Image 1 (cartoon, rainbow, N blue to C red):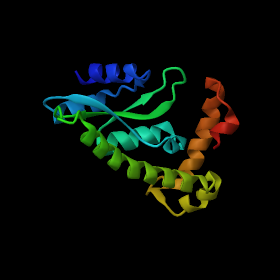
Image 2 (image 1 turned 90 degrees about the vertical axis):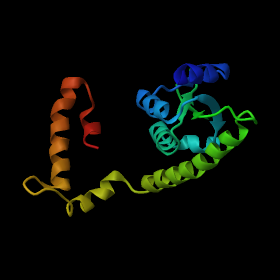
Image 3 (image 1 turned 90 degrees about the horizontal axis):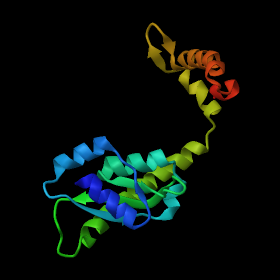
Image 4 (image 1 turned 45 degrees about the vertical axis):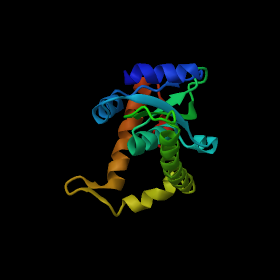
Amino acid sequence: IIVEDAKELAFAQGLELVEDQVLVDEVSGLVEWPVVMMGSFEKEFLVIPDEVIRATIRNNQKCFVVRDPKTGKLTNKFVLTANIEAPDGGKTIVAGNERVIRPRLSDAKFFYETDLKTKLEDRLPKFEQIVFHEKLGTQAERIKRIEALAAEIAPLVGADVEKTKR
Protein backbone atom coordinates (compact mmCIF):
# COMPACT_ATOMS: atom_id res chain seq x y z
CA ILE A 1 0.00 0.00 0.00
CA ILE A 2 2.72 2.46 1.00
CA VAL A 3 4.82 2.02 -2.13
CA GLU A 4 1.87 2.13 -4.53
CA ASP A 5 0.36 5.20 -2.86
CA ALA A 6 3.75 6.93 -2.76
CA LYS A 7 4.37 6.17 -6.43
CA GLU A 8 0.94 7.54 -7.36
CA LEU A 9 1.48 10.69 -5.31
CA ALA A 10 4.87 11.30 -6.92
CA PHE A 11 3.57 10.50 -10.41
CA ALA A 12 0.71 12.99 -9.98
CA GLN A 13 3.35 15.71 -9.62
CA GLY A 14 5.46 14.47 -12.53
CA LEU A 15 8.00 12.88 -10.20
CA GLU A 16 9.30 9.40 -9.46
CA LEU A 17 9.65 7.71 -6.08
CA VAL A 18 13.14 6.55 -5.16
CA GLU A 19 12.28 3.10 -3.89
CA ASP A 20 13.86 1.82 -0.69
CA GLN A 21 12.67 -1.61 0.43
CA VAL A 22 14.44 -1.43 3.79
CA LEU A 23 12.66 1.85 4.55
CA VAL A 24 9.34 0.40 3.35
CA ASP A 25 9.77 -2.50 5.76
CA GLU A 26 10.60 -0.15 8.61
CA VAL A 27 7.76 2.27 7.93
CA SER A 28 5.31 -0.62 7.50
CA GLY A 29 6.13 -1.68 11.03
CA LEU A 30 5.49 1.82 12.37
CA VAL A 31 2.02 2.47 10.95
CA GLU A 32 -1.29 0.61 11.02
CA TRP A 33 -3.24 2.93 8.73
CA PRO A 34 -0.72 4.29 6.22
CA VAL A 35 -1.49 7.62 4.61
CA VAL A 36 1.17 9.05 2.30
CA MET A 37 1.72 12.79 1.93
CA MET A 38 4.25 14.97 0.19
CA GLY A 39 6.41 17.60 1.80
CA SER A 40 9.17 19.82 0.53
CA PHE A 41 12.34 21.60 1.56
CA GLU A 42 14.26 24.56 0.19
CA LYS A 43 15.94 24.01 -3.19
CA GLU A 44 19.19 25.43 -1.79
CA PHE A 45 19.78 22.04 -0.14
CA LEU A 46 19.98 20.31 -3.52
CA VAL A 47 23.67 21.29 -3.71
CA ILE A 48 24.28 18.49 -1.20
CA PRO A 49 25.05 15.10 -2.80
CA ASP A 50 21.92 13.01 -3.41
CA GLU A 51 23.15 10.24 -1.11
CA VAL A 52 23.48 12.69 1.78
CA ILE A 53 20.01 14.15 1.23
CA ARG A 54 18.52 10.68 0.99
CA ALA A 55 20.29 9.40 4.11
CA THR A 56 19.38 12.51 6.10
CA ILE A 57 15.69 12.36 5.21
CA ARG A 58 15.54 8.58 5.52
CA ASN A 59 17.36 8.26 8.84
CA ASN A 60 15.87 11.26 10.61
CA GLN A 61 12.27 11.21 9.42
CA LYS A 62 11.74 7.81 7.76
CA CYS A 63 10.68 9.56 4.55
CA PHE A 64 11.23 8.71 0.89
CA VAL A 65 12.87 11.04 -1.59
CA VAL A 66 11.63 11.64 -5.12
CA ARG A 67 13.43 12.46 -8.33
CA ASP A 68 12.73 14.06 -11.65
CA PRO A 69 12.30 11.14 -14.07
CA LYS A 70 13.69 13.22 -16.95
CA THR A 71 17.00 14.04 -15.26
CA GLY A 72 17.24 11.38 -12.58
CA LYS A 73 18.13 14.10 -10.06
CA LEU A 74 16.51 14.42 -6.68
CA THR A 75 13.92 17.13 -6.24
CA ASN A 76 13.17 19.17 -3.14
CA LYS A 77 10.16 16.96 -2.38
CA PHE A 78 9.81 13.96 -0.10
CA VAL A 79 7.07 11.47 0.72
CA LEU A 80 6.14 10.75 4.30
CA THR A 81 3.84 8.12 5.74
CA ALA A 82 1.45 9.12 8.49
CA ASN A 83 -0.57 6.78 10.68
CA ILE A 84 -3.79 8.76 10.42
CA GLU A 85 -6.05 10.57 8.01
CA ALA A 86 -5.82 14.01 9.57
CA PRO A 87 -8.83 16.35 9.62
CA ASP A 88 -6.78 19.11 7.98
CA GLY A 89 -5.72 16.83 5.12
CA GLY A 90 -2.33 16.30 6.70
CA LYS A 91 -1.13 19.92 6.52
CA THR A 92 0.02 19.91 10.15
CA ILE A 93 1.78 16.55 9.76
CA VAL A 94 3.57 17.69 6.60
CA ALA A 95 4.54 21.01 8.19
CA GLY A 96 5.95 19.18 11.22
CA ASN A 97 8.07 16.90 9.05
CA GLU A 98 9.30 19.84 6.98
CA ARG A 99 10.19 21.69 10.18
CA VAL A 100 12.33 18.75 11.36
CA ILE A 101 13.97 18.03 7.98
CA ARG A 102 15.15 21.62 7.37
CA PRO A 103 17.64 21.83 10.26
CA ARG A 104 18.91 18.32 9.53
CA LEU A 105 19.60 19.26 5.91
CA SER A 106 21.10 22.55 7.08
CA ASP A 107 23.53 20.60 9.28
CA ALA A 108 24.33 18.23 6.41
CA LYS A 109 24.98 21.17 4.08
CA PHE A 110 27.25 22.81 6.65
CA PHE A 111 29.33 19.65 7.17
CA TYR A 112 29.50 18.98 3.42
CA GLU A 113 30.68 22.52 2.69
CA THR A 114 33.16 22.33 5.58
CA ASP A 115 34.56 19.06 4.22
CA LEU A 116 35.05 20.65 0.80
CA LYS A 117 37.36 23.27 2.30
CA THR A 118 40.05 20.67 3.03
CA LYS A 119 41.56 18.64 0.20
CA LEU A 120 41.70 14.88 0.68
CA GLU A 121 45.48 14.96 0.31
CA ASP A 122 45.72 17.43 3.20
CA ARG A 123 43.97 14.94 5.49
CA LEU A 124 46.46 12.12 4.89
CA PRO A 125 49.05 13.05 7.57
CA LYS A 126 46.43 12.61 10.30
CA PHE A 127 46.01 8.96 9.32
CA GLU A 128 49.61 8.24 10.28
CA GLN A 129 48.57 8.67 13.91
CA ILE A 130 45.55 6.34 13.76
CA VAL A 131 46.06 2.63 14.29
CA PHE A 132 44.06 0.51 11.85
CA HIS A 133 44.95 -2.81 13.45
CA GLU A 134 47.70 -3.84 15.80
CA LYS A 135 49.16 -6.27 13.25
CA LEU A 136 48.31 -4.30 10.11
CA GLY A 137 49.65 -0.86 10.96
CA THR A 138 48.16 2.60 10.69
CA GLN A 139 45.31 3.91 8.58
CA ALA A 140 47.93 5.63 6.38
CA GLU A 141 49.57 2.27 5.65
CA ARG A 142 46.17 0.78 4.91
CA ILE A 143 45.42 3.62 2.48
CA LYS A 144 48.70 2.98 0.66
CA ARG A 145 47.86 -0.73 0.36
CA ILE A 146 44.41 0.05 -1.03
CA GLU A 147 45.92 2.57 -3.46
CA ALA A 148 48.36 -0.04 -4.78
CA LEU A 149 45.64 -2.66 -5.10
CA ALA A 150 43.32 -0.23 -6.90
CA ALA A 151 46.12 0.68 -9.33
CA GLU A 152 46.53 -3.02 -10.18
CA ILE A 153 42.82 -3.65 -10.64
CA ALA A 154 41.98 -0.44 -12.54
CA PRO A 155 43.36 -1.52 -15.94
CA LEU A 156 41.51 -4.82 -15.68
CA VAL A 157 38.15 -3.08 -15.36
CA GLY A 158 38.83 -0.13 -17.65
CA ALA A 159 39.18 2.44 -14.86
CA ASP A 160 41.56 5.38 -14.83
CA VAL A 161 44.62 4.44 -12.75
CA GLU A 162 45.27 8.07 -11.76
CA LYS A 163 41.75 8.48 -10.43
CA THR A 164 42.11 5.34 -8.32
CA LYS A 165 44.98 7.00 -6.50
CA ARG A 166 42.58 9.55 -5.07
